[in-house]
Image (cartoon, rainbow, N blue to C red; front, top):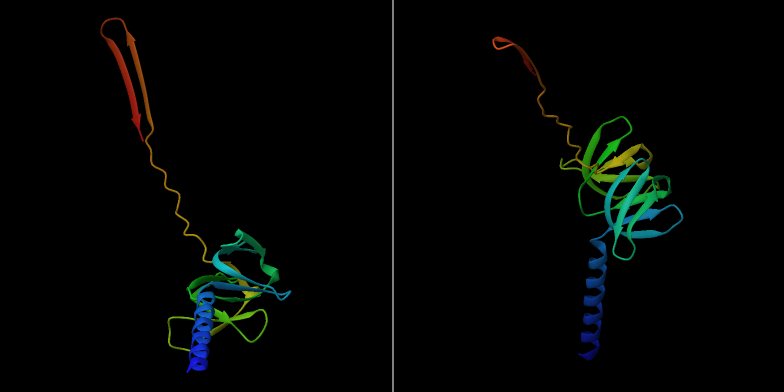
Length: 151
């Protein structure tokens, strides 16, 4: 009985620690390193990863081999198209599988084709204003000329 309790406790702790680390985003680099954190964005060939141990890290995109996350990401591809889904590591280096909302099989995506990840929503520039121009000319007691333009 004592041995069974030890095995059960060990299995429970192992399960707990494995699931705790699986919830983070994982970035696998070409040199074999794996970084865990939260993928913030990627643009201009720089991946931004928020980590507990080092804060925000900026990683050159050409060093990334795989991505894995539990959260959906929006990928912008080289042709300008976007695709949203949950990326998982693929069997091929430099390629991920993206589980989209459609019930079809995950879509394979080459990382070399990705130009941005979860781009920030750009708000269009809005300008508001008015232009007023006025001119008054007074000559004597009764000669008055006014000009006024509103735009």
